[in-house]
Image (cartoon, rainbow, N blue to C red; front, side):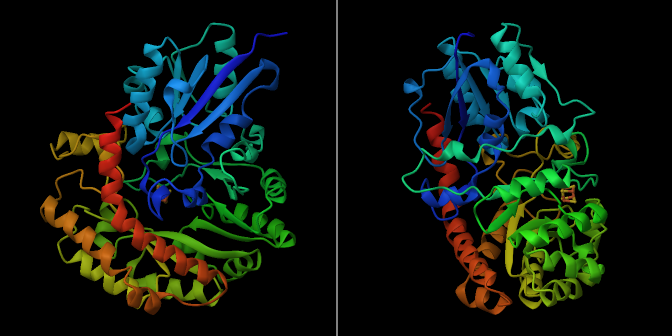
Length: 448
Ligand code: SF4
């Protein structure tokens, strides 16, 4: 019998979208990332590993109380300082640490200053291999994602692993069918984190959905609609399941009326579209000119006609943005009836070509990774000051979520619109809380 290994998996707090209704509270559960359920499912059964999970967005972590032989920490850029603080603590107690997640994937050498080993990219193969190597005392410094990664090997995430975390039953209804992206929009990390674009076999996705108790499924794919043939097959397989679902999509879906109808018939109630900007020149600059501003309104109407609500994401602080962009965008979202707008500030994530360009141009004005949460100004803008950018962002975040604005915008096209309305209220509260949350987290990082 193998000796038992005690593994602790930690997800540090710090991502503002998990605080939509305030600070640490049970509502954060509505946005549970799949990170921990996936990692737990990847632990080889024959290794005699006992796992404890710690999701700091929903619980306080008492690090002194963690009894582990190995600690695994996953982080994105705004949570990575906190991850490093935890890692340094555990290593000071001679407990080896492995790190993974988007930030470590893009910056493995930096992560290695705080960890014994780094897992880059999708962990389907590297996680079991790393754990095997650990139990045989031959752990390597970096585990990369193989170019030929077989996504049919992805096990069903262990959605039960959160069951002891709350006093009421948690239903994790998120899922991911495709990974990465073949486009290269300048501000986005997706093209760089998992070696291109990958699809899971549709049968695997459908089987997984059959086992999710919730009637509503939320896809975490970067773009579920990228491959229209895959999408068509997937929608046909979804129809008998009679589930409602929401997913990120690209706006070109509206051009294919037959496919759009099929998507709606399969249960799609809402899509999240990256409009990014209402300025065509900007879209060209950021390599997203497959979006056509002139067609935006017509496309949104097509989605609404099909009974699908539109959540739209807009980014501010692109090089061609001037101070007028905030008013122009607000006018657009009201006129076009974007059901749920989401705003972010253009952020160059370390480890991407965009970050390198900004560094070369000497435009990085914020080096604290905790501020890289897409709500704070990180680079010197081209056509306005950093203060004007932050104030413009704060202004539109307030204006767009005024009750009168929300009610004017939302198309009450189905029962799901009620949820969209609640999400608008959640974002209204989030915008109030996010700056305070970031400041609290930065202060708290020093206490680890
Ligand atoms: S923004 Fe969307 S389309 Fe562009 S690279 Fe990222 S995932 Fe792909």
